[in-house]
Every structure is written in C-alpha cells, then in structure tokens.
Amino acid sequence: MPTLYTRTFDLKESLSDQEVQEFWELCMNQLLPAIRKMDGSITARAFSGAGALRADLTLAWIMDDAAVYERALHNPELRGLIGKLYAAIDLRTSDQGFQREITPELIQALGG
Image (cartoon, rainbow, N blue to C red; front, side):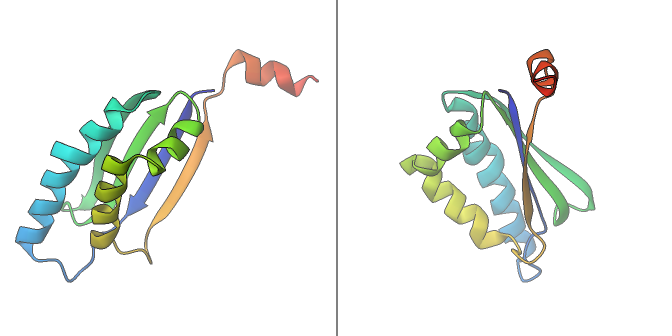
C-alpha cells in the first residue's frame, strides 16, 4: 500500500552558513537521489517553510509500502547519508510520520 514518510526538523542552530549550504548540497545531490533509486521508491522531495532553509523543514518520501523504509535502513549507501543528516538536525525539534494512501481497498476493508 503506498506510504508517505515525512521527517520534519530544524537544523542545529550551531551550524554556520557554509555548513547549512553543505547540508543542502548533500541532501539534494546525494541523499534524495539515493532514496529515489531505492526499489519501491516513488519520489522523495525536500520542503521548506518560513525558516530560511534552517528551520520548518520537511523531507517527504512516497514509497510503494512501508517495507521500503526498512530496507533503506539496511542499505550501506543510505546508512552513511542518513547519519550525516542526523548529525545536522536538531533532534529535539524533529518528528517523523508514516501515512498510508487512502485507496478503495482500504475503504472496503472498513466494511469487514
């Protein structure tokens, strides 16, 4: 079942402008392309709110099913990139979520 994964976060306040730029270059040029290449990935994108690319940030990943996320955690290429992501984000403001796409099959399942 198609699944949306979101990671919302702020970057650490201690990051310099150069480190913020390097973070976004890593995300846009390495992390998101690697996620998109995963078998079962539909798309992965980054979004920014009013935080000037430092806060109110979201990474959104749509995949065939939640098992794609589990496989990604075991992918050696992604594991290193995810570590670099976590090194730059403020985990106190970070949150994640998984949501299933509402499909006719899901609605039918409500009926028993």
